[in-house]
Image (cartoon, rainbow, N blue to C red):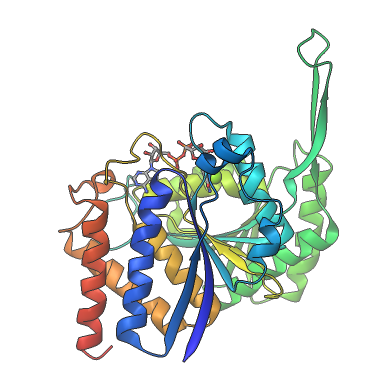
Length: 357
Ligand code: NAI
Ligand code: MG
């Protein structure tokens, strides 16, 4: 029996609601599938915690999390605490300190879900650089509040950081349909993105089986909408990947569906699994948040932990539920509550196992 130690940070708003459903599904997997157990420890780190303590997580938060095999996170951010405080107080330090330099975001239109596009052949994955680039946190402000105010935000692209994310994307492309698009903007960003393209062009020689294309990120966003059927794997910098994947999540029918994983591929540190969406204050507390993104994210966590079979079981159950269409939340045209969707997926898992999965 393998037992995994998982740190759970539900965070704020709908984060708490959807993580609840994800945990239910993981517990069902433990109960019906055998061979796996979890030791969950929940941490209250959030904006609420910040308002009480002045910090998003305790001083030794990173040290505490170091002992876990994975981190399962909902979302942080809530009105009353500036977004850059919640992000830089918790999420970004975890990504950086644990060198989770890969952010994996699959974009797939699940069966039964109506996307906004005419073309519904949508099944690709975005590999986003996750610790440097435009979100390096380097810069400064001077003369604040005066007419001479200046703000500088510096992007940092290292050779090591650029190569490793691209290699990872090439490796994924090899396992999929051998097609990789690199998002650039080297026409305007004449240092960082010219460098990005150079690294890409050099690396692609090592992967002759992979068909490659370099596209400016603005043109690529249009391509997402018009020709998703031609997209297999996309590699992008931190900022570009962030924006492209919110677009990707809309292509999936709702941001509430989109999953995400912050990976430290060497497994030297814990990886963190969180849905793409935020705390959604506009729907929080109503019990109508879509838990699918968080549940799909839990499946990605199991895949990372090496529990591929259980990960697939969750995906199968989830997609059966969306295909049947009876339990869908409001954002995707249904009227089921968050917990009803979670329960339906749990029941489906049990049913599949009974049928001999
Ligand atoms: P958001 O993702 O929270 O919401 C965008 C829209 O999608 C809203 O209309 C919301 O109702 C809807 N939505 C989001 N998740 C949903 C779900 N599970 N089911 C149904 N509908 C859902 O992004 P927004 O509004 O930009 O940010 C809200 C707060 O979340 C901010 O404080 C922001 O900083 C934070 N945030 C945190 C993230 C994280 O922790 N990883 C990521 C993005 C935003
Ligand atoms: Mg985002």
